[in-house]
Length: 199
Image: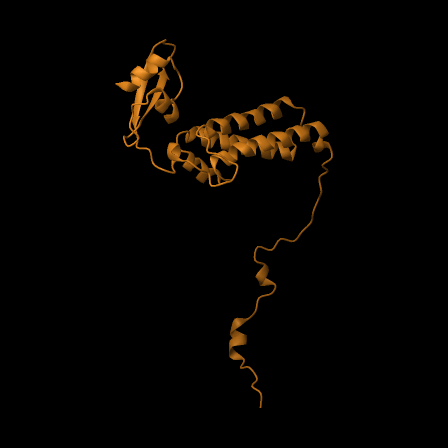
């Protein structure tokens, strides 16, 4: 089988081979064939390679068949899910190592978002479309950029110690779940009244 030959001849162990790598290392594969995705599986301390074959057709626009994000300047990244996990974990690590109090609202919010995104990515690692659907903040490539941008904000927040400048405000407000109650119109009375016609 060409997949096991490819894996053993290249010495690639413990990582998933991308279609570009497969095409580059094995140019005799025809474009119209169904590609098998090869992955080397490391088995609990053993120094042997176990190759698993997942026979999936390459669907244009989905998963590994995605060729464009549709956003200018944002290329497709087939490794985006791993980068989302790494970026959000870096945020959590930096917050944990900081002296920002655990009661700071910014810390609470960033930790909750980062943990949720990591959880969703780990549960749906091979399904970027499902990740986008559950997180609802754009494509996976955009989620990578969001983690990078949040790291910039976090650095600034820690440097300026903004949590010390935030003061709690007690805001009193009268919340009415149905604001139309105050301005309700009696539709029955209005229907019974006939408009005055000019004479």
